[in-house]
Length: 237
Ligand code: AMP
Image (cartoon, rainbow, N blue to C red):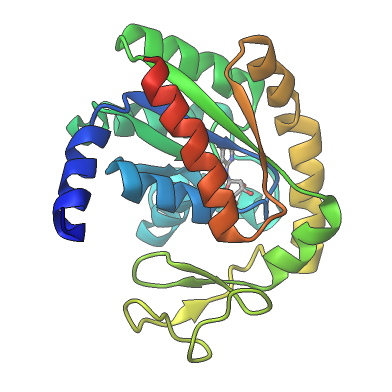
């Protein structure tokens, strides 16, 4: 079988993943990179609440106006605003076979609400990938992160630089440095994670939905670990 046929077969097969996949972990753990890869492999929508909020800011919506100052200070946006966005998004037809959350849920209230929504729409099961990283690595990953303006491809100037400085390898667009990827705000974001999001580890552990991923390894090794977990989850359905 040639590679294109194998890919097509994989895509058909993967339609049946039928899970909500959640990436849980601190800023800089590699959630965005890995969520993009899972979404691509399983042909599922990649739902980054951070991206949705940045888009709302760009468009000048009411949610965007409320979110902007909080995001600039590394604080969380209120649950009801995030939940409103998420609920509308997962009601769209492309989410019926599953979806990949990156940066959601971030509080116990959000997790409870997601559970309620999934029950209401009779959505299968949830796989939570807990990206485990030593804190020392996070600062380097975040200060070095650059994101392509057109399609969100992610680079790191220290570990995964683009071929040409400031330019995306894939689509040639400019690479941006997020304003909250600076040292002052990163400290706040990490503190916010510890206080408001870390409790979700226990929450999902107690529901037997949590799988730990060693996210210290290189991106391709991390992807391989995640694929093993998700293939197992698919077979278990
Ligand atoms: P991220 O792109 O995931 O790093 O998110 C950037 C910022 O958006 C965060 O620091 C928060 O201010 C806000 N944000 C993203 N997702 C959520 C969420 N699920 N709940 C509350 N705030 C969020």
